[in-house]
Image (cartoon, rainbow, N blue to C red; front, side, top):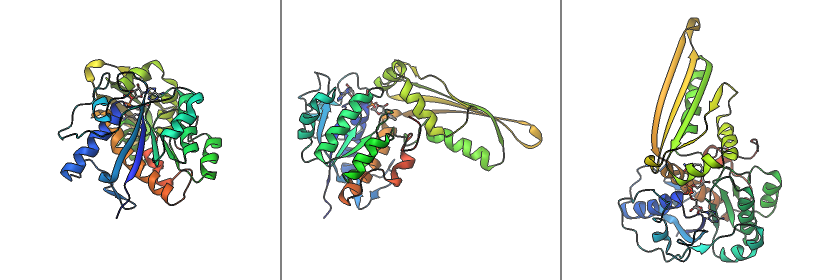
Length: 314
Ligand SMILES: NC(=O)c1ccc[n+]([C@@H]2O[C@H](COP(=O)([O-])OP(=O)(O)OC[C@H]3O[C@@H](n4cnc5c(N)ncnc54)[C@H](O)[C@@H]3O)[C@@H](O)[C@H]2O)c1
């Protein structure tokens, strides 16, 4: 019989809402719509249990996880499924290294810590990574802050036999994967890129935060594109009316046969937190499997799911 994966989450925001609701939906319906890999090393989507959750907002702390995910400013919609109480009260998180021990103790029984707090707070990310390390738990950094691409941290997780996956998830069908695919296609077909840009607009709290703290995210988005300075990423834009949807515009200008012009414009509209959950579900199972098999550090299987894996620029 499969031993279910016990996951703790940091941040009870939109991505956690999409993950918690999605787990309930897939368990009830048995559907495979939107699932990239139904089984990873014997682990199905329904084999994941969230056993602890950390937040900083007073309104969420103490509430059952299944209630806390619907509190403002979260705006990911309710999915079409029943959501039984999780029996997991949201715990007070940490904001600096002084509380690493308390959080490590609260991780008892968990195998994986999914770090899903706002990007742009590297000290907080490192403090949670330290708590995971102390507790003997695998750590996944979904934010743009450098953790897994810090060679020292990677060494310490590797030495302890603990998986460390990050940094910054690449959404399941987001701007980075689409942009990369189109750039690759141009090259494969022998066209010459002249210039390209991407514009991202969104209405989530994540977007609002990234407009105010753009630095680590911009670096990470460029890491994901592995492209030269012909490709530009416009500053992110926050539009509350978009709610949990992201709208992205991609433009590619190229030259084909006889140096004639080729121009491509694409508009993508997706629920951003779904794009995160669709990847987190794979990262969690990759991390759990690596932990159970004593494989510490990075897993090559995770590389294509990340914008800034180890070895990319900080
Ligand atoms: N497609 C995507 O949505 C996507 C893609 C790549 C990366 N990410 C990253 O994933 C992360 C989560 O995204 P989100 O949309 O859920 O963000 P969010 O802002 O909705 O949720 C983050 C939550 O963390 C809480 N928080 C803040 N500080 C905390 C702390 N010290 N301890 C515990 N909780 C804390 C916030 O109050 C908030 O509820 C962000 O860093 C985002 O940049 C998202």
